[in-house]
Each structure stands twice: as structure tokens, then as C-alpha cells.
Image (tube, rainbow, N blue to C red; front, side, top):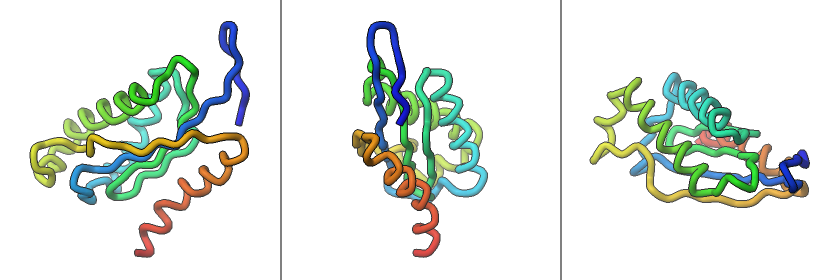
Length: 136
């Protein structure tokens, strides 16, 4: 975990965030998943935080986010979920037909803070998500 410097403060903040597709529908596959990865990384760059690790399973997303003290968890989640849903529906309109009501993401999410003691464990856990889901 890298210690960063801001104007008048020093910080090392990382969050493990997980959110699911509404009704746990398995719509995040192949080119949809590839495009979603690209969108999430671009969104993080645009909003000045960094995705350290990212894995997309067919019905949920895991990200490890490095952020500044000015980034709040609800705002990070809001931009990641909001922008990705809008752009995914534009590029893949067939996704909407699999979801009742037209919402891509479940409104809830999981978040845990990550320390330098747990960062490698969380990265490995995220990287192994797609491996374990394929064997099911």
C-alpha cells in the first residue's frame, strides 16, 4: 500500500467494494464484462481515484479502490455504478430485457477498508473470484 501526500495531509486509503447485478442475473459475460472493466477504469481516472484490482463475475463486481480523503464511499460507488449502468445499457440494450424494471445494479453494496496487512490477501481474493465461479 502506497502512502500518498496531499496538501497538508498524508494518507493510504483503500476500499474493497462489491456490488451485484439486480436479481443476480448473469449478464456480465464476455464482451459486456470486458467493456465494463474498461468503463470502470476510465471512470476512476476521470474522478481521480485508482482501481488497484478488479474482477467481474457474471453477476457481481469486485474492485479494490485507492482514494483520497476527499472521496467518500457513497460517491465512489455512485459514480462507478451510475456511469457503468448508463453506458452498458446504451452499448448493450439487450441487457435491459433480462432485468425487470430496467435497473442494472442492486441498490446495495459491500465495502471493507483495507490495510497494508490485508492488501495482498484482498487482491488475491479478488483475482480468484472469476476462477472460482467458473468451476461451479
